Image (tube, rainbow, N blue to C red; front, side):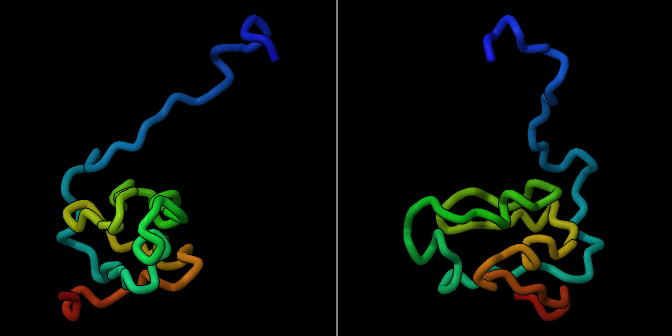
Length: 98
């Protein structure tokens, strides 16, 4: 498709924005905990997988090695744990989390 044929108004413009609603981590009941021994990027020491980053609705999962979570803004929804193909992310009760 040529640039002339593209309609500049038919695609979305968006960026991840951490903390748009303010710090939200203080009211969550569960928090994700990453087991880096199972996490694919940590095990391979190279950029791979990052499905937790891709599916996080709050954009609080880093795309780094090791993967990190910004708990100030994490709402504890559990999407990262649900989507992790190797089970490296587990949800812990907030009171039991380190």
